[in-house]
View 1 (tube, rainbow, N blue to C red):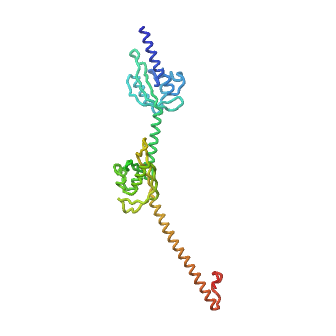
View 2 (view 1 turned 180 degrees about the vertical axis):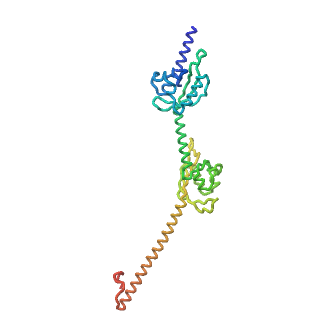
View 3 (view 1 turned 90 degrees about the vertical axis):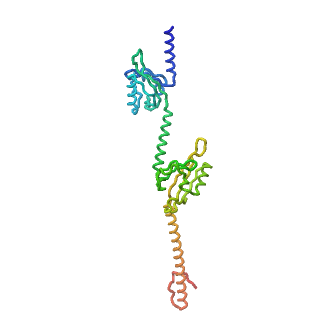
Length: 307
């Protein structure tokens, strides 16, 4: 009767392992798989036990984690314990998955029989984290490398971050801005526009907006194309503002210079047209005097006959 209970207990354990959502594996002292469950096969994209049993554990290791896997197996087969953690795996089709693992040495009759462990698949979460990390890396590269001046503000217009382009445009260091309010450094009527963006949650854009730096009056009036975009939180409220600016002072000054030059050209054109009209009048008067004196006219063919 006692032997039957032990058998039932083993059967129950085997059923629990086989039906578990966690992947189970058993590796012998030589590093070869002797047992895996259905969840393990599914996680590694194998169809049959025969494809795995008797194969070395390196079959499922990625190149990047192979050395660490070897160290873990050596420790476990020496009877030591290891810290559970996250690991990568190589699947049958060559794809890479990720899991959390725990493993322990196995003893039978006080003799090391191998090691066993469980895996919990975290591939979706890991790939989502990797995607977020990649997006963050790209955004960081865009923020730091952009030639456009970029500023991240909170909803009260306090500086969170600025990039080098903005700091250089303001003749300050990047570290000068956090802890200060935008309108503390640069007071202007634009504050009402910023408040309207927070209220309406709609972006705002302006072109060639004039601005005089209070800390650099020698710069005179500068001109900026700028955009203010609200970033909303999960509740739909404005959490941050992205302030992007492009200095168009040189372009504006060039446009104004061209306008002055065009105005001057127009004035000279009017002067020349008036001069030509006066010359025509003088020639007409000379021709009339010649007629009255019975002399040949001097400008025939160049002017309309004036009687």
